[in-house]
Image 1 (cartoon, rainbow, N blue to C red):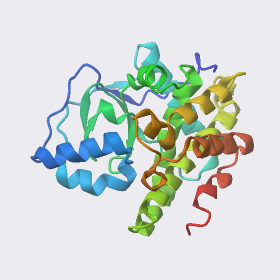
Image 2: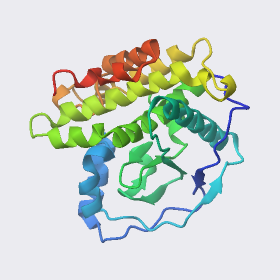
Image 3: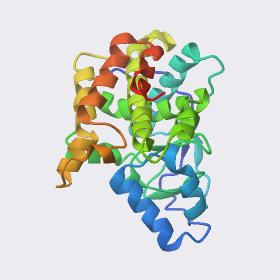
Image 4: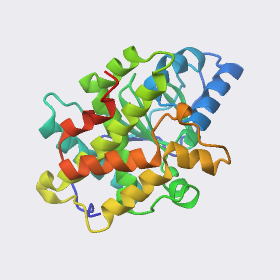
Length: 280
């Protein structure tokens, strides 16, 4: 993936090196259980923000340095995120970029206390994407994902996709529709839509900012390898358990690959309503 020399937005808040923020609100054992549920079940903050807010509380955290990070990993996040924002600004009227925070170990968020074990996540309460960049190594060494640049960009774009869902109201509508029986199905649909959005972004990346960010041969395959590695069924098997579709929160490997590819092949946001077909 070509990205060096791409436009930087400079709006990154870098909290790396500050250490974990203190947990406010006296979460205690209930807060710990909520975090463990997130880590092992893959629950999306879009669907659990009210629980996180009540039981975990908002972590107190020193404000990080604002701007463009100096290291390559931080610059990569800035360039890719800026390019995603440029694509969505052209495609979505009134688009407003999310905040982006880099951290390590743990940090306070509007959705409660965020930990590196959660992986990258988006908090709709403060409209912020939170990234612990050690997840890149975890993806490639422990989960069997690609270690290429597009695999990392796919994850960033996926989280920006959750922000787009908040702006368009898709996330809120899904939450309102969630019932005891259909809750997981809507959670899966939101995740697959975010995968599709990542594909749409990739298809249009070179059409903004002078074409400085662009896909290269092999990038889509790297993204599909990553989508395959982080499907619910693949993760359940990796953890030594049986595959239980009723507990899926992000979709199977086949579904994640399907919708990433669908977004990339079409380059059209409208295609990404597909995961909700039959649910409305």
